Length: 462
Ligand code: AMP
Ligand code: ZN
Image (cartoon, rainbow, N blue to C red; front, side, top):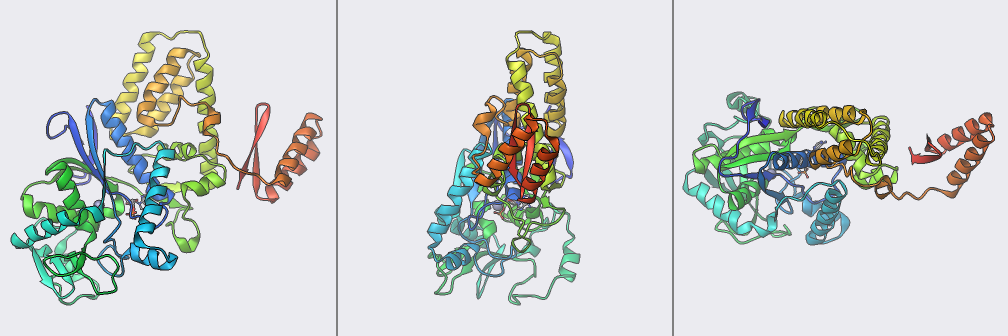
């Protein structure tokens, strides 16, 4: 029995699809104005684990992910410029070039991380017609009003506003920051459609003149188009709960008058060195940055899987090193099982399968599922154990059936470092450990770590 934590009810609930055997799921996708960082990727690994678990439980999937290539302003609450346009100006490229570059990089990262692409990928700029239609419907139903810079949603008309995050609207209004737009009826009203000034690059004709959509309307319009309402599951990162998803609910339910999404699920944030990732701190790593430093995408996936998706995950290079070593050890153990001629009692295998299933069905308890895998690998070596691990990998997606060499990142090390490492290897072979240690120090001082392995070594950029 699959149980999932629903942000809406703040508890684990038994999951059943709303109709037939196909789960309809919408995932907030990237805003393609920059390379996605490892925090973003944590959220998509969570989405992937959820998708794989649903399939493991026998369901079919209809998943939609949007790509935001218009409408996401610098502040989530409709202030500032469009992120895409700022990037285009800074990089002296067209908005289309920016979107193409970063969308391509994003999907390449998904592939490297073994994240299955949802069945439907929906670009915001290709759904302007649907968004305009949606805003018209909201206006007709009395939830939208026009002011000089756009069409806004009147949150005071939607009595359930705040139900996802549990915010108290009265308090929110009382303590609201200084109003940036005094034409708005309520400070938390949000833009559905913005009127464009002539130098705004992206603009479309609409019943309200030339303009562009708000960020939130895109997800409502595209989820309704592809999944209908209500649908089963909506995912995103926790930062989307208070504004973006609250606004989606308002837009949806102003029209449906009923629950529009059955399960809202959110992945917790990734921190770096216990703090926020930010450009100014120079700690927004990408999957390519990690590769440069000697960690494969699978090392990172393994790192993420060790923490439950609803817990904060602190990224440090120490913990990443640990994950990398554990993942390699896992592969080594698997190889030993693969090459064994022995058999394991069917009952023992069934017990592991049962435990594994219970763990993943308990709100995707992947850390526990990994623990069960490790315990199983400690059994006497057998091909049956190997086959069971590969079966578990349908959920884990750790490429457990691939040989390690297929995973190894291709890093180019400076010649000086490889020479020092070779000298150290020779010194060790000659049992000159003092020299070997001083060579290790030299390598460390030059910014690399050397890890000894049976019969060989590996060098990692620190
Ligand atoms: P964005 O492209 O900014 O819309 O973000 C894409 C996804 O990544 C969203 O679902 C965010 O909630 C999520 N996200 C952003 N920052 C982090 C982080 N530090 N850790 C985990 N998820 C994040
Ligand atoms: Zn969204």
